[in-house]
Image 1 (tube, protein in one colour):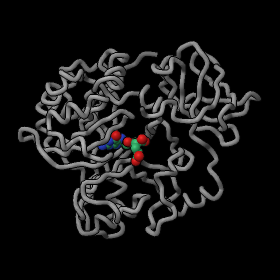
Image 2: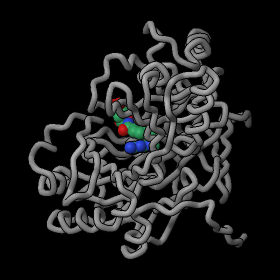
Image 3: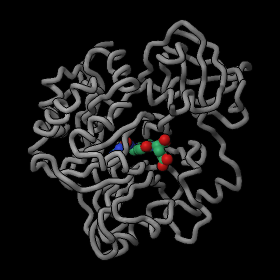
Image 4: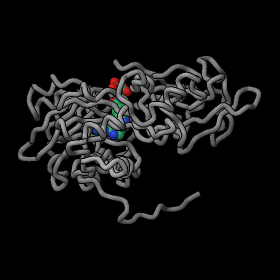
Length: 372
Ligand code: THG
């Protein structure tokens, strides 16, 4: 099967697009209608940088949905499944967004910029329309927009060294998801301790899309003594560490409880949020599926580009695999799947339909590797 994907102006370019092309980007995906690099030609080297030194990622496709105005906090609380009245300016939270049926529709990071201004830093679905539609339907006094903001991630054990060299020692004191507005040689930005890896890391939210190359080059220069190089959200590291990839690990109808994200949803707090009633019912009945890990027998797998079906040993449908990769640190095939609850206990043996034929697999607990 060979064909080309037609490209046009519907797919947006990140402010770091030129810089990533100059750095030798070899693979791109499309995320929030924007190109996002997924490789620079040497996967193993990119993985090693992430887990051993430091990597620079263009994640501008993690777009911001800004909610600003007198009713901003009210609207955010209607959407987010945690008590946001306790959030301080300068703090962030992982804030899962569900629809009224409990379906997980995005899994953003929420940032509180002011008492009346928030960002949802979104995964790959069109949240501006959802948030704007709810605001309009309720006649709330807010403005919902996508501001000129583009995250750049610095991930890996040496990330604190690079950021301290660029910004000063205060960056080391930032708590997870906390952020501060600052600048770098006149480039306006927000510096946060966050990022889609299980390594130490920061994200710079660039607030002027004309300065992408300037920022990329400054971080690259500061990082050279610390072993920096280009990289991207890493499918092997995220599978080993169990970070959710919305749209890949989720099914269109999957809810946060079966995805194993119950710890981030407070069903017992006073504030109501969209999906609370449905999720409360799902909790009472018990989730019908569970997100689990799998070890798949050798030989080494080719990367998966689609969901692979699984059966139990009697041939009954068991669920779908969303990602299957050879783990570099564990030196064996690992996968993440949504499995029907009766078959989701650790130790259960399943058969996976890979593109190269059936393979035996065993259910195991997540994550595969605990953060060190
Ligand atoms: N950074 C920013 N925006 C983003 C992402 C990001 N938007 C899209 C996507 N990633 C959102 N999804 C996630 C998923 C997990 C985490 C962050 C964003 C995450 N989880 C930690 C964990 O699971 O260990 C911590 C969760 C917690 O303890 O609160 O970091 O990466 N800007």
